[in-house]
Length: 109
Image (cartoon, rainbow, N blue to C red; front, side, top):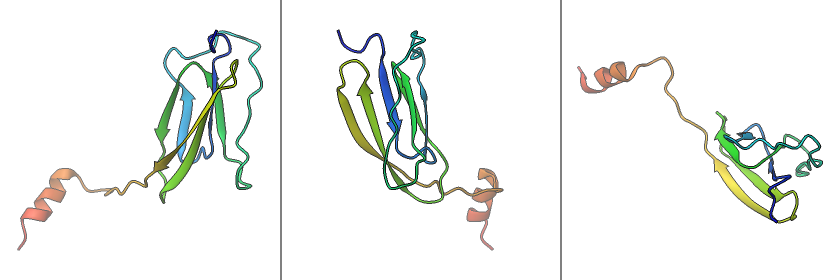
């Protein structure tokens, strides 16, 4: 039985920290897909949800670390799994190439 017809719904509680999309070959073939729930959390509704057979999660560039709740629901069975991902801010040096950085580091006067 499983979830082979209507697949799964993946809900990310904060779309500003994680980009959520249907993964490769994960599109559902059904045109009459079930309704998609949303995450009701702390009053800010930046949740994102998609339906498919598999999903791709990609961290976004954010100014501070964030914890994001991800829930996957079987659209036919109702089974669910919820987990938390911590997205870390990226510390980047902008405008300096690796070679310039190396030269500045090792050519102290």
